[in-house]
Figure 1: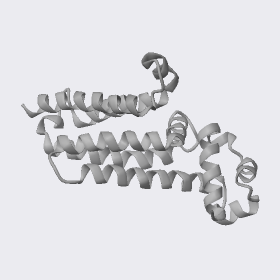
Figure 2: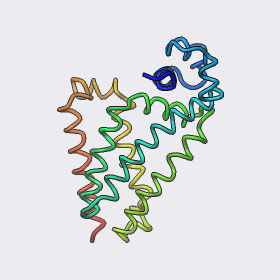
Figure 3: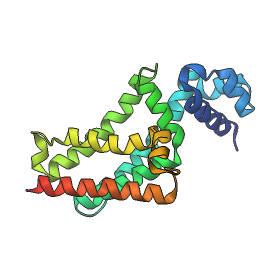
Length: 197
């Protein structure tokens, strides 16, 4: 593994576990077994390193969303793929959730996170409005439906301890993840049927 990759891997873990403020360059250097000079060489500073970690996540997430949403099929089928793909992305990238939640709730990198997230939300809302004119205004606007769906997915990952107690087992087991995806897809099917009429 190249030095840059080792640094990114260590930074990802420490930003996820401790947040931007608490993850010092010294700790990242120690965890990556690289010296701080190499971190400065590749990333200039901690902000640059954090930006690189975040950019990598959002490149993957953008590809994940675009491949589902812009693929073939009617919007309900594409939304179903999007729910599957996004859930899989979160399951495989657990540090991402911690980094995003911490920063969006008052971290120093909040604006950077928002700049990445807003275009993704807008892309999905636009597709919904185009497919379902009923989502352009009223109680079921595309934006509010998107926020509701996002909440249904993300809460499952951010409240792991509660979910474990409610489900009586590991929420991240294949069986529980599969059940969660099916549940969300069923709810979205119900909403889709309602907004078609």
